[in-house]
Length: 237
Image 1: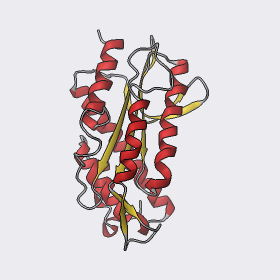
Image 2 (image 1 turned 180 degrees about the horizontal axis):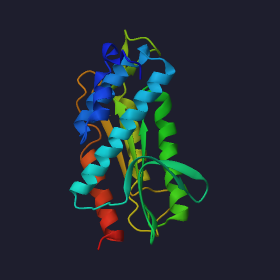
Image 3 (image 1 turned 120 degrees about the vertical axis):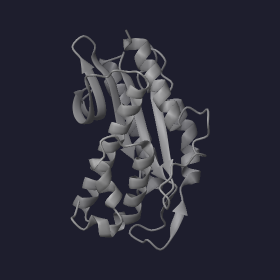
Image 4 (image 1 turned 180 degrees about the vertical axis):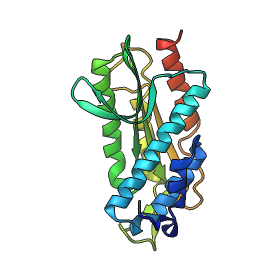
């Protein structure tokens, strides 16, 4: 990221990379600052900001899974190449063991810009991620995380007019809920053990508590709970 990123409203993204134990709230605040400042960034700086955000969210996910009592001693928060049944992929959070091979894999798919065009591509990405890894590692606990702002620019690069993305997210929730719920290693490979949809307010950076609705399985806390339960059921002592 460029050295003048603080003047572009992206100080929180830089700060987030330095926090030893980031929270989901800190992530949302930094992601919102990226959305607000993205139109001022060169492509290289924009990519650097996205990588910092994804890395931080991987660390948040690992910390919250450990808080549920999982040791995850071999887990790595950060991109690591994993060989799947179809091709090699990069997992944002993963754990392997000598006995089981791949135990845990999470793909983080930020959808911060051009949400209307990108959200369905991200849906396909996480399903492909799941089937690829489950074909080779049927016992692996696989998760997908999508993060989205409540608003996007009406026109690319134009910060004057913003439009709501909530209706797009609500339409996607039903399909995303059906992508999760893989209970056992015998269930369909294209399903994920858990899917999270993290929605944040573009202005305040606060986590939106209304979307997705409680009980649909896609809220952050529900995702962490089901991932921990699946892992414990398969690999717990």
